[in-house]
Length: 462
Image (cartoon, rainbow, N blue to C red):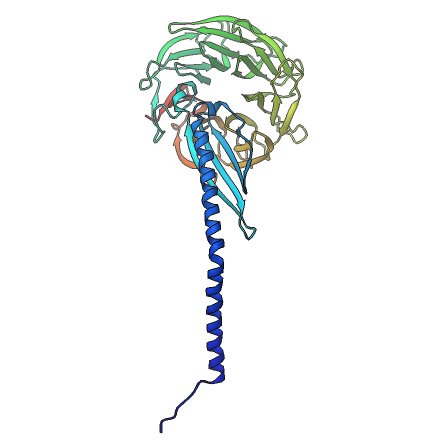
């Protein structure tokens, strides 16, 4: 027998619950549409403001690279806008970030950003190591400059010359300074001339720096008297190298040039301050204008934006001066360190370079130490990143967005845009050789290595 069945009370309640939920959802959707549309319009306005800020920075062209202070945050209606610029290498490239911030109707923070890379390619020839002349470095092509050297200690490079120096020679009359002319970007450097520091000594040079047609070198003398080494100043031409001036110094270790001033680091001594500054606006008439007591040997000096960054051999906790910063805006005034720091482990600070606002420090490689550090130029106490190269660092160079690190056994190429995955590739040095120094000229890298004799290698991305 068929039976007619009606709805139970439970089923009726479930049906009413579904119906009421649907009505509520439709009501909320209808009431929320204006807010959703308003927030969408706000987001579009924020993105437009960020895009406009980015476009305005690009429109500044070459002038934008020489202006370090960007406009501060601006409030436009409900939006807070800002622009930041992070320089790379010598400053020939910059990452621009234009941002707009606002709050939704529900009090939630929102942001829109437009990012991009701009390059000062119109002035690429003015940068020492610009990658924008001949394209990106892909796979290094290694060539050896066909010349036999003594044991090399350093090299210096410009767009037109390569200088190689040796700290000692086998014989009394052997040359310790070698000059090569770069005749074209795609040819090997051509040997130009050489120089013997003194026919009565086997001592050569420990460090050198180029400024246009003037070469500044430091004698490798390690004697203990107050004035036994020298700063030698050479005038260079396409045909010859001529020594124009010698200045007596205590034993020295490092040298750099910036904007008419020569910065010299001495070996640690109680007889003289280790940090010296010379005015060389007249290259053959150097005038000592400033100094600072460090208390230890200065392995490297880097000057940027009126600040001198110094790497010393003191890695003691008490000294706390493995890395130091000085204000050199007025070298005639007494100088005291703005900041100092010491990194963990037994490694000794050896090499420095800067890319924009990031300072890189390379150290020696004893046990339980890291070798490669990066810092903000405004804070050298706290490292941004730390890398283990397992080999002492002999040279660091930034070229565009790439960091080249020469160790005793290889050359690492790193992507400095990506701190999470920085390593790109590695080029091993020949078996039995040791990396000594690294220099850059345009689209090419020059590497000094030693084994039974000195080698000068050319690494090219062409």
